[in-house]
Image (cartoon, rainbow, N blue to C red):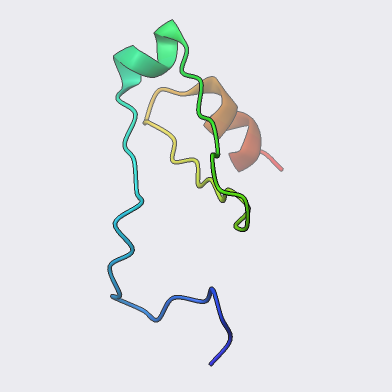
Length: 57
């Protein structure tokens, strides 16, 4: 198994959730790790204009 790869269902205890209200205010995320890159997944709400732009591609 490759170091740093998580198996499906494996908990990593490093997930964060940003609510819609907080995201609208602005959020700064800082990676303090000296060895691991930050990985971010973006999920869109139903009325997000950016999502509509992706769907039209």
